[in-house]
Length: 168
Length: 462
Image (cartoon, rainbow over all chains, first blue to last red; front, side):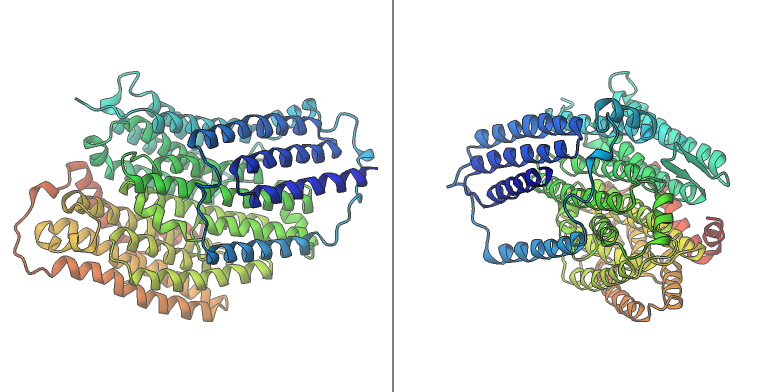
């Protein structure tokens, strides 16, 4: 049962991810990206990581994608404004991505779907409770230091957004 | 640990300096604070290896490189003070971002866990994405910011995938446990995939070929002093971090990784040096020279043990103290000449003999000629690599160095041969604190070039 669900979800993820890249209209790209994120949340649910699944849905599919849509609508991007990139860069991108695909396939070829059963996990694995325990015990230092990261992102947003104060 | 807390606190102080009315004295405050931090850091952590919360390893390596990084920040603050006093009105924000970036650098030389590594890389980079675009009226600055941000995020994504694969193989983020795993199983494809992706993302950060395409554009577009910080601080932090990772996660470096790094090194040296020959803009010359220098440094990464560490220390210090003054002179010249083209440097030897001397010495040091510090940096690096059997790579590196002498000396010759007779131009004179800093830098380039044993003996204790 899990395996069938996994294959269906994987199909949806790969198909919609391809649509993101291939569709000419940026709005369609963003909408397919939302579907990609939703199916990835499905994967996380299959791995019994409920909290991560919900956060992924709220943050990525919800907040960030809405921002994407806003920007695209504000800039009024559509099929006509999209410039065609030249052939060489397309070929180079295809080559590089193809090589990465080959190496990833090689990496994963010895692993099989369903090797690991989620039955072995404890009852509250992946819950917010467990995650909080790990975050505030084992990973306390990176968690606290991330505040520096957010502070600099905030300063940056303000600095780039505000008008330059002139002395006169 | 104390250094990270103090530097973050200084960053917050810089951020709120305009509100609490310290705007006038914020620069001396920060410099005194950072010097105190360096002192406290050396006093409390040297010879006192400690692991903080299993996330940060504070050993002698960390003390040495955090001192180098904090010193680069102090020197940067001193050299850039003129620019910020005259032109920039968001000084507090800039200083705060630079200090936060310093915190990222400190994390990079001390991480003991891949989660801390990720935080370090991000804290190092995100302030710089912003600062690269801080010249808001210049479209090249904005282009630099966006280019750096997009490519940098992509590299971070690759790094995260690498970390995920490493976790999949080993079941842990802890470097010590990864090293234990690594000693037992060497044939796990997941593990190799993870290391490869991690190596590639580091190669992006140090602008190794073929991941260097962002560097010239970003260096040219960003404001000159931000470029100076990126080229000196980020390179030192990324290399020290990369070396720290290899040192901690492997008892002996696996062959595929060694080959990848040596290959990257050869390509980087050749492409960086040959491309630099064709540049006419001083900023681009320095960008490609930075790429070429990254190529030499890559040769050191697979070499473990105290010799590797001490050569890395010598080379990175020599690189840092040669690069910062070069960017200062570049800033001064571009202020007067209006551009960073090589033509603007004509006659600098007559107009401003001191600036010309500074640039001459730093070019000599970057080219790796005696009596400058860069000579011993290259000397140790090449001898160590030959001893490790990288004969062909050293041959390529020597050819690259020969090419590099051409473009470093092109600048020097431009400065001293000029047909027009100009007298001294007082508007170019550096202010007192910059003057003192430049003299200190010049003297230290010469001292380290004449007595390299000072650094080597420190390097043996790491």
